[in-house]
Image 1 (cartoon, rainbow, N blue to C red):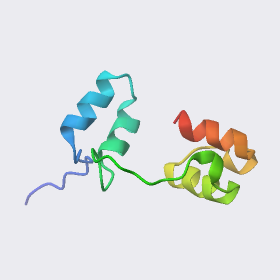
Image 2: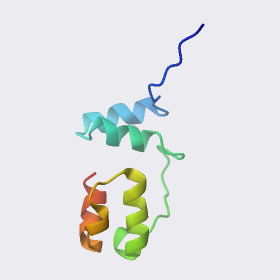
Image 3: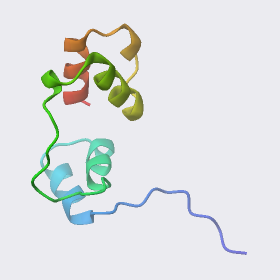
Image 4: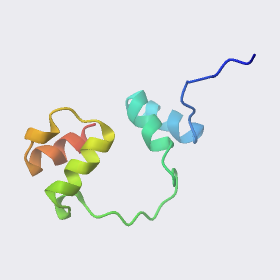
Length: 83
């Protein structure tokens, strides 16, 4: 019987290594390298300041930022940028 490998795989290994070399944490580098459009330019995302507090909260929840329910919009922006 083959063993199940529960170790997450990096989708864009080259980008992952580059991000780690730049000083990103392994977790953040993996999250970025595993995004659907990893390594592609031309994103159309709005800036954090243009988003509502609920949108920022939902993103923080998806990422798993602790203490997000007590954060102000400014604190959510800071936590998202530094995670």
